[in-house]
Image (cartoon, rainbow, N blue to C red; front, side):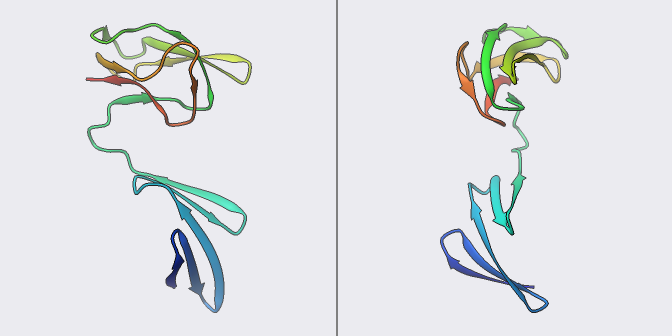
Length: 118
């Protein structure tokens, strides 16, 4: 396989006589590739990343914690509304809330950090 850059974020990929154009966007830890009508995504979380992220697009309905709060694994930290349903987002482990990155009423996108734990 041979890959040649054609421009910023555009590559020509040659494999077994076939040529395809692939478009790539995003930072190194969150790359999106568009090829042959499909979208591919590759993420690489930082090892120290301890944040709870949005699993889908939605609206923050309730924030149930504040910075400094100690939480137990499984405790509901906030509630999202998505697809006309309420989705409780729970602590993945025991910890202390170090930062809130959202407020009630905020619109959030997938993988957006919402709550950071220590």
